[in-house]
Amino acid sequence: MATINCVTGVVTGTLRENASFDWINPNTSGGNCLVSDVGGWCTASSYSVPQASSPTSPGSISATTKDLTGTFSFTCPCLNSPSTPRITIGSK
Image 1 (cartoon, rainbow, N blue to C red):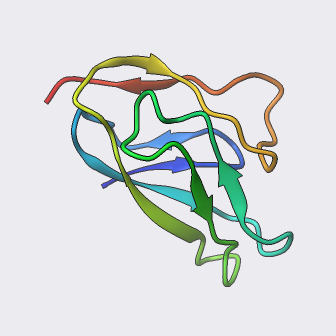
Image 2 (cartoon, rainbow, N blue to C red):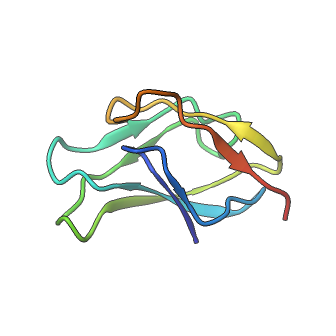
């Protein structure tokens, strides 16, 4: 299953239309990370990603992409990236 790191914006695996993936949060302090502005490409408009329980066990929450393809973004106060992440969703 594909993942999106809400701190780095890095996508691991391949995101597909109408498919599940996990938001992950590697931070072991600071609490949950609220991922928002994703209602255009996810089935929910925001996700609260729990903090990691340890450095090797990131917090995660499952999400599902909508039935569409393209390049999208998200916002998150935990994001530690100088640019807006670009998330590409491919066809099935």
